[in-house]
Length: 616
Image (cartoon, rainbow, N blue to C red):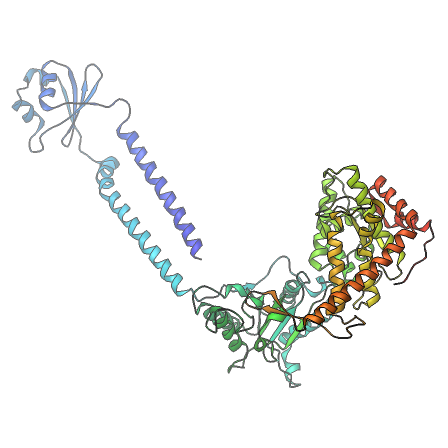
């Protein structure tokens, strides 16, 4: 509101300045048209009259306008107390010469008369008044801002064009069911109250970024026929103590006036982090704001029909008092979509995009495990951009596949110049990954192998599971380590040397091997126990401390067990590549020629050698 007032004032001041300049310009043109008149004194005028040079004298008040016979114009002033003839006689004018001059008397009047009087009088007053008005308006705006500092920037959903409902949200069946009951509570509270059921105070949406928390909140706004207010939790916190608590009170008071209503607080972890974990003690602004939220949600005043809907990516750092029943009664967990949900999400985001006849969204869903809803929306958008870039009218299956890889790894870098030797090393490196994956029965099938650089990767092997897995076995982890070492072993065996291209593979293999020992209890020597505790400084929101709850001797045993897993996978990978060297060469040669092998092409090459799958 303040910004709008400042814009209006600036606009008015601009037009006022333009108007004054236009008036000044008009008067300057009116009063100074043509050549400037000659200014004469009374004695000069008498001399001119006596010489017979004056033709006409116009008298307007004390001003004299003289028309000379040489077509010049002149001006003069007479005495205010005496007439013109009297003044001229006092200066010795020739009476005969004066009789030959045409004298004309005009009374001052009309708009020019009033303009000459009013403009010099009123213009300073107008300027002074405008200055005082500007000063007082600024003071008033400052005072209004001071009184509205504790007001929350609460926004209300009204009638908007892109209205969403639960039908527009693919997947998330359990989450939608929980929220449908909340909407039903507000629409038909009687049937719940008759059963003695209490309306839930708060619903917390928890899940990784991009899983649809804000989207579900918008769907609730579209479904509910009650006022829906929304605000970001970061808007509560200011540098001044007490402002966050005041804005919290104002937000809840606004929602109560419109009850029954829904108040949506996005990213509530901005103010809801665990108390006493930061550097500011118990009196910092964030904790004061959290205390006020706790009181507003479940304090002494319990008679309220306001449901608080909140979303967060970090439920682990929220204060326990905020999560207890009576405040956030329901916790709705949003997981990453499975293959069926991914297909439905892709269908929703493809409604306004012209798809080719070859497009199979099921195959795209197979290639996108671990993608969130936001990732899938970005994928469809990238595919449409790619099709438009190549001046195509329809989005093809290849566009979708390329977009999958772009979202995963980054854009293609075909312009990157590499030597023939580097290209050969990359081809054998990726062929080693693909060969080991095709040789182990517990490995995910290979969908694509490429030596085209994407992002920071010189090449990549795309392996995707055949079904959604929520649990992984020890054998599957060991298989992953062996596949990760495939490129390293292939380079060493073919070229007798190693390059930096395997650094990320070795890092991943070491991470998985250490997790098997310290987190999953899969070491036969150390047994079913975990080692080490990761501590987190909640105030900073990062895992910055790792506590060793074991001795130095146990640490040495952990390192030994990690090496056992790595060595076992390395020996298996070396055995596969050495015994199937011809297959490795065939895959690398095809990559050198085509640069990219799709699943069908890869299976043809491997199928010709009739490989038998091996176990760990």
